[in-house]
Image 1 (cartoon, helix red, strand yellow):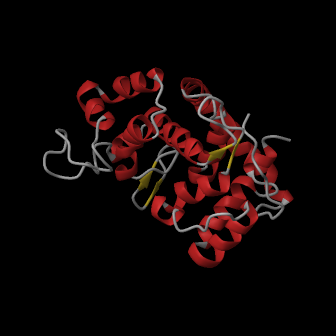
Image 2: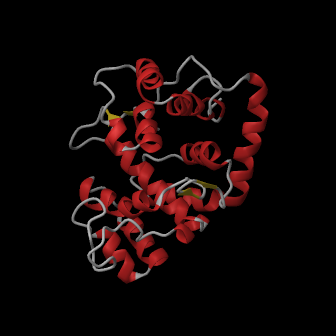
Image 3: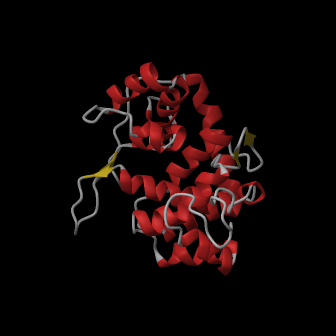
Length: 235
């Protein structure tokens, strides 16, 4: 298990814990098998409780959740979702054969070929003609729990790899900066790049609150703050 630094500051009160645990229990009952399958098919760094936390915060476990242009359990938008297989396979180069097979199974060989072989973010492909590939993965696909879980799990794999530390070229990482990962997931890679280097998780959270977004700083606390989901699921 990767080391994660929890924060002392909290978003949730003690009174919120029972309700949040009930949300996670519902997620496990409905989607636990799919979540475990996706974690097992990756490179070993993604734990089920991280996906459970993500889905609890993003959608309260509602596969039909819609918030503006984001959809489903992991609240992905179509442009981001259309990039995820490319990011994992070509940018991070950590896609496993099981994950590649899952993309082919869920999306069919023709669409999977486009998703896996983009030249750059949302690059035009044979599936999109001359237009950017921002809707290769559609709203309807993201409202399908199996597809949403597969893509959001792969996105988390990609982000864990990006924000992990302690490893070498031949040894696995020992920890992950979930504060930075959450900024990337919630506010996008452009905003994640604005966060100054060298900040502690606490300092990152404060910087995000002051300079970027209270919504995103609250998200960090919901995830790794005292009484946050990572905290209560590992007590």
